[in-house]
Image 1 (cartoon, rainbow, N blue to C red):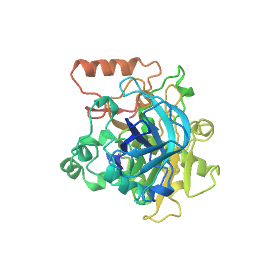
Image 2: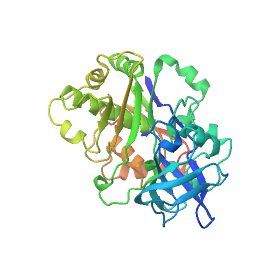
Image 3: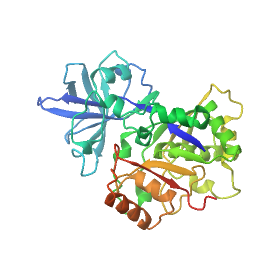
Length: 357
């Protein structure tokens, strides 16, 4: 088998600030993947959620420790979270008045953005506990937690030659509940990914050797499926060969019509003409949900147990071809009755794609 991991690293993306009233409110950075975290704060607009309902353009907040003024430069609307969180907020764009880079500023004054349903403040130990042991590329605001089950010792036993790494920088959109009756009406959040050509070539080699792909986490799965459809677009001459790949929420629908493309062919189309040290970058809004999405790349999925109203649960349901939701309900009920732990710091399970020989 060949394992694929998401090596994105979580930054300390939660801040606590004071407004004109002097009361403390939470400011959570929602997406770091779409910016250069090495850029100066004062020249970067950051997508954020302020846990207040009366946020307006021009509002100024001060970081609790006195580390810079934060100005609201645009307001998008209400930010909805599930009932286990600390309530809804306002989605907006902010600019931090600091000469530090975004990464350095967050490392200096931010706190680890542990999931809101834990209902506790972050601790120093969370910097390691909420990051995978192999995390390398900074850019996530939530951890790809399926990887937390892998220790250095386990990875050593698996062997470097049986592992590949990519980065999908997880955004806070992963916590947004699906509130619409038809999942296709849910506006899927976009996330940025990067894959070293060397790593994608190692996946291609594994596939040519008929090694099953064991994909660790929904984020790694979403990235591989997105790469497949980007490869199909390239083969059919439907992309502009720009430096950034792009995949919309339902771009895959017309692409599934016509001649079948193998996953090897799709990936080879993306690495053609590139050096091993090059990096393929892109942004995906791919929506994976039953009953019509069929996985093209992933053979086995390692994943935690997810919230029932999440897009992560939809992805798992699509993977096991559970259009009615009955299979996943039975699986989760059985897990619960046997004492398995759910959500980010919970237990892991493995699903195999139905029909896999």
